[in-house]
Length: 69
Image (cartoon, rainbow, N blue to C red; front, side, top):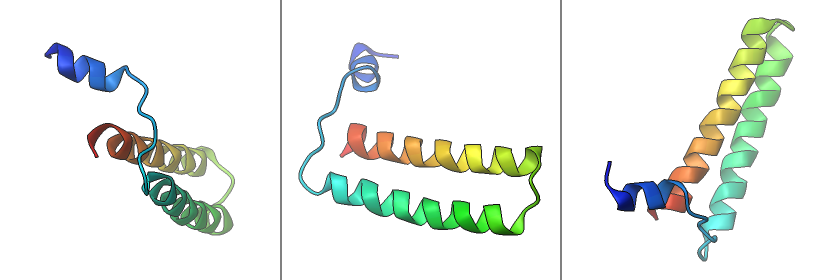
């Protein structure tokens, strides 16, 4: 891995114009899905994992926006 990729991964990326709105939209969509999962799935390990992975997906999506746009 070259140094520029490491810098991309381990450097703070201040939000650019328009990005906060995109982050908010992603979080809102994920919250809706999380609420639906919570409503229709039993309280169990699998549901917990589904919610954790959804949270991770949003964090990675936000990282992609911050790092690559």
